[in-house]
Image (cartoon, rainbow, N blue to C red; front, top):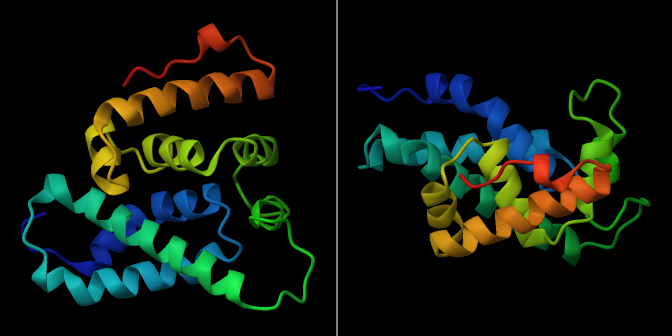
Length: 167
C-alpha cells in the first residue's frame, strides 16, 4: 500500500488483531481493538517502514495495548467473577467465531507460548516478525512455538506428530 490509509489498514488487519486480542484473553477485545487503531491512526503519518514492516508494527501496538489493559485491570478492584485472564468471557460470547475448546486449550499454555501461537497463526506473522514483536530471538520463538503446538495437540487429544510448526 503506497499511500497509507488508516481506514484501509483497519479493514485489512482488524479481524486478525481482534483474534490476537481474544487469544491473549483480553476481557474486552473490541475496546482494546479501538485503542490499537486509534494509536495506529495517530502514529501512521510518522511510520517510516515499508509494507513488510507494517503488519508487525500494528501487532506490536496491539501487544502493548493488551499489556496495558492487563495492568489497568490488575489495579482495579474486580466486581465481577471473571476467570484470571478473561478467556472465559471471550469464550462465552455466543456470536464469537472462535472455538471455545481452542480458547480453553490456549489458556492452559504459558502466557509466552500463547502469545507466540496467536501471533503466528491468528496474526499470521512470520517467525522473524514474531521475534521482532516479542523481543525474542527467532530460535527461541521457534522452540516456544514447537512446544506450544505439542502441548495444544495433547490438550485437544490429537496426535502431536500431526501438528506442524516448523515455520
